[in-house]
Length: 334
Image (cartoon, rainbow, N blue to C red; front, side, top):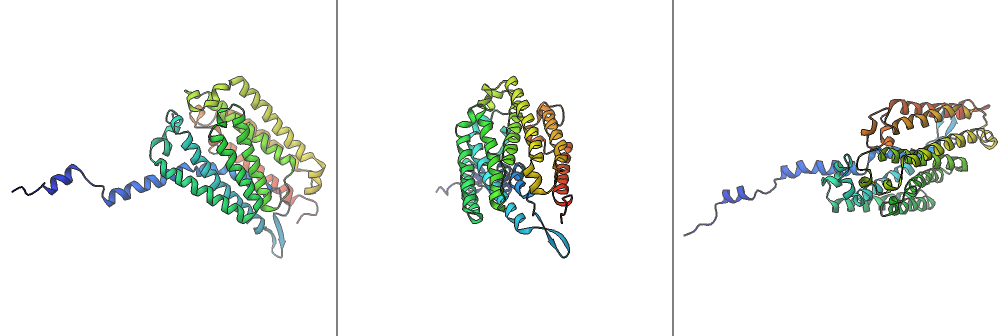
């Protein structure tokens, strides 16, 4: 009488994943999800905090001396958090849309979705959740902030699903996203955002975007990595960098010397921050050309600038001088 298959033989032929195996796999997926939403890129959302920096009442007087205005700071940080979640959704959706192109990129092929570490279904679910949470959070702060966040998401969806393939329009849309960040910061903190601030933001974002495209154009398989690169040329991007870089500096200088700016901050010394702007523009061009940092091996100059000590130091010094001029050197300042 046949007693049936041997249990040990069957188990050996078709092993079932153990609880330990699943526990070992879960951290890899979780790490992949976190990597997909690009926490290191959230530094771009410091633009949401820009209006707060130029808020002349960022510090309030107390019996113990000047103190940070926690209401203004708290709302600004909350708005930045909302945009971090929205940006995480955008990065996830973009990786889903770019999965095939990323697989031929020498660096991007290791991204969690492109490499298969994060399943497509799970990535889609995370993107949907991030969209809903970011919209809900923005509404809590302000209905107007909900509108700006919604426009940001729609604009980025349009970018991910077609407009990113159109040269120059792709970078323009990315720059518009930075303008929306600044508007969001102004709404959250109830700060009037001047046209100068919006113009400087747009020009600087265009400059950074064109720099990233110039860096990508120099890499191997550029056309396969990003469709829009087929329409760019080194000459056109060099010209775009020259125009936007110069325009950024000129606009910033005009802002610091504008009578309205001087009257608002009650100081004529904001122009002292201009050298930091010039140095930042020059340093970024070196990163674009691969003359400093990891050169052309870096994924992008905008990411490399976060590791570049001179660039980070320059930004920190700019911030210190701005705060010193606006809050400590004002005649009659607290």
